[in-house]
Image (cartoon, rainbow over all chains, first blue to last red; front, side, top):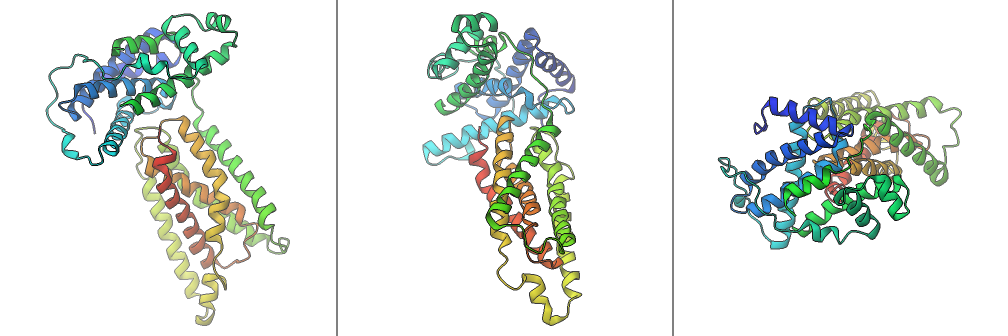
Length: 185
Length: 211
């Protein structure tokens, strides 16, 4: 269905994702970087003329891929999984926008030649501002573990929560963040 | 926040993720749904009083319902994995429907003309088309919860498949009560009841499964 990723890319990204699932942060980071490039091409092709919307969707989908990466079944190739989620986020975005505008036309969804300019443009919404809207416990857990690069243990000591509490708060918080990102678009 | 910063944030302190045990989670969910449905049947409509002598009929009806659920299961298992090909799994559902129609026709033709209507409807309104969706509800709720934890991408289809699977489980429990034992009744109205569950699932899917 999608030829954006060659099978070599697919195997490479897949290996990175699997290492990330096993806890390798550097591999996971590289997976997300590779996924971002594919997603940027995918969304820009379909939302011509609004690279900011495309970048919003890249970010939203990256959080979706990250928080729901356990939905990837290693028995299947990677790109159908990645693009199924990307496509779902795109449809959700178009529905939301359609509902807000009252009417929406499929003409806006342009599927044509790839956009030559693949560099990241700025996203419209600010994820930092959205983080502030999360419940206090999730916000603190994310800010300690994900932004200040404290270990889960240190975060647990700083907050008085247990380590598993911190892990769950980070996970739930990121899922909630994706929802906030979607609703803010 | 720029996308690169977001990636840095996501990749910080990555914890190992447990591989989801797809089959085990599904089995546990369905077992839970079946137990809940059985309890509901026992409490709300009671087991049929002649269960001792009608055990074979009850087991046959439960087995038919289990078969309907088993036909839906491969499709639901595939819909749990975003992007996985569905292949023959949709066709299997329609083959099963075709076999049910055929079985109904053969069973009715085997009856004397005067008894046909009674064999088909059981003599009064087929209440199972109301009852089975109700007994399917706990399973449906559990399946929605299971699915929401993953990343469903085809919400209407997933809703329909979850609905039909729950309908099969609900029908298994309902068989303990169901007083009508005619083959044509079961292959018609149980299937209609399961189809109603599927339709409800398709309608509610995009709302309940959205993430």
